[in-house]
Length: 71
Length: 418
Image (cartoon, rainbow over all chains, first blue to last red; front, top):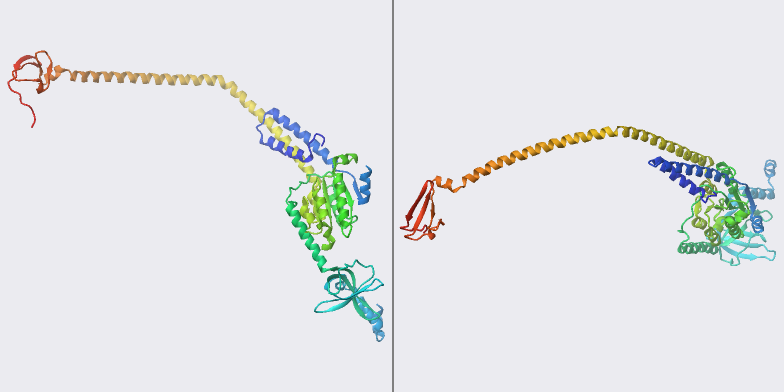
């Protein structure tokens, strides 16, 4: 996640936003701000989930040690 | 079976008969690869490299052989040593001799030594606080799992299958190491070092991958000896050294090893490690969809609440001026009424008080007293005399009555009293 929030942090912030909006009693400005923040976080989470996909690397110890020292 | 067909045609040759016994013994799992404990006697190591001895205890004995180069023989083994062997029963047909063919031999005190070393390591780690150090939390969704385990093992294919079921295509790096035998400790430690390197953001960036954020180290089930590497200090140290969470997944539910005790998470089996750290993809998508829906509907509700509150306020505002004037009018009326009634009652109270006062004033005037039959006595100077002591015999006094005055002279004084 580029803007500094990890997936875990984003999800816990989303939980706060949902709870806060459902509790209600906020001003309209604040409601809109929370809504927009939530939308951005949801999009970030989706992108983040995509980044969990990748190739399966299976190597013997010697090969992967060599690969890393070559980098 | 050749022997069986001979049985039908006539007497069995002794050679065939002995071989029949041999086949039977070799097929029975009870007699193959069995761990047997006993005392060594007639220990003889021949120049050919084979070693012959008798394994015995108080109840029985059997001759045994260790073929040249079959296994390492602890040099401390001698006549009378307590040993445990892994051996199979075989029958040497030429001599009709039954014997144990030994695959592995360990002196019992060596096994005792391993247990003792384990006990000491646990004590040391406990004193260092390694067992109750703060544990690192697993990420909700791992971006890159490193698995340190045996290449081509059943445990690995179980883990891979489970990952694909839960999160198809989840990124992972499998670091194949030996998980048992002499070099396994060193390889597991090196494998963990590689995994730690891959968790370094700098190295990950160079490799164009997200850094490793979970390490699984483990293997499938086996004998205590097979799993022993995970009880050794170098492996424990390599786990503790990790900056990211390490899951120890060794053997079965019942196997508790030092690696389990120092890891951030102990999984009961390799498959359990995957269940612990890889969430279900669909469940995560459902969770995010749920957040999305709840944020939307809560926001919409806030706005419609605000709109109806606005409506209510508007209608209240319109009615406000008239309502205000009416209120004030009613208040004024009430106040006026209270003011009137209270001033009326004050005046009438005062009036009656004045009448009473006048009456009592009249009652105490001296003239009224004289009218009731009393008289007032004064001396020549006009002072009112009220006590006997003010009088003397022969003194002239003036007496005042309601209707006139008289003069008199005192002729006698008689004091009240005893």
